Length: 490
Ligand code: NAD
View 1 (cartoon, protein in one colour):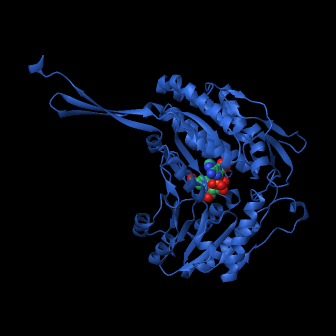
View 2 (cartoon, helix red, strand yellow):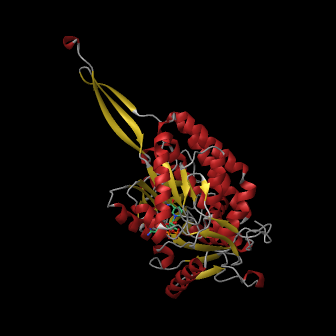
């Protein structure tokens, strides 16, 4: 989307049709400039009802198709999405703020995840148990659940949706998605592209709008059998209480405060790169961002210097400009929150090694920019350690040894991911066992693989996305007992 392009206007996408805007219109603004880049319909409870009914109507036919056919259709949709990256990436940058390069990475990853599940279609199987009793065998059938409500945040609007869409559709469910109220444009456009590629009407619907109205109408709709939610912990708790009425099945992918531990025998250069990349990708607004860095005291100064160098060299600017590595924060609210967390932390203690405020450049004054920032040794009970910090600020602490690092890492209410950098395999294995979270990277950047299950513990939620394990969250396992007539009965 170029600066000269007219704003996009999009209604809900229901039963294979992009509907008109209607009366209740919401403006979408570019976080780098505050320019209006789109107008969308804020879906009412009635719109949500129509979308859920369309999904329910499509369910009988979709779930009755062969799994290979569903996989084939999801594969075609994925290829269409990939082919549309040039069109979609500028839209994603305009509404989310991330650099174009990162928008392309995100969209490619969304297509890759859909392709992954398309490929797993033929692996979707239940079980058969012989000899439960004489002449008695058992089957475990995997049945789709029905209509899935998929609610996602604004930080990775397309990958977080693809994580749900892939396993849900391949397993035979139909989906009504609700993107964040500030990032609906790419999702609405992607739905149309996927429909044109062969996803039947009603199988994938999108309603945009605020969480309290549109989101809650979706969660509480009696025909929605499962809610797959990614977002903040307080919203997850609210959704959990609303879903109790069903009761409905839930996956909750919530907040995180991932620690990265560097021991003195680590490859320090690579570890510092992983910490920097892990913290500053998407302007620090990732659930699995590196949010706390614990470094063995003998090498802490060296690591801090390396990370400061990387942070201070990042090019901050509008996501549409060439060479930009750090875009704006997504909204005024996010920047206010980050600045407040930093202020409250520094009142308690800690040294700012680089950054600390808004960039001085005049041309950035219209957006929600914040400098890449490193804070050394803030108190362990400050917001940097106890809250989720969603922005480009990395705190560093010295630790005596692995024991202290693990103790500090586990002291967080969150338990999403963690990283350990060491050349001592025993230490790495011990850390992987003792760190309370759903994913541990050892000597590796924080890349999420479609082949492995991803999901948190503690305040980071429950349930898995990615991996063949994700199918467990979109299917019911039904037991069937088959008793044949024995010889005596024949
Ligand atoms: P948020 O909880 O405010 O919103 C997420 C989504 O929920 C949005 O679509 C929003 O409109 C909707 N929503 C809000 N209130 C609702 C309600 N009462 N009922 C139904 N839907 C409602 O989260 P956010 O601030 O937009 O996103 C950032 C958070 O998401 C961070 O905490 C981040 O760590 C988390 N996140 C987690 C993962 C993961 O996989 N664990 C991935 C990415 C982001």
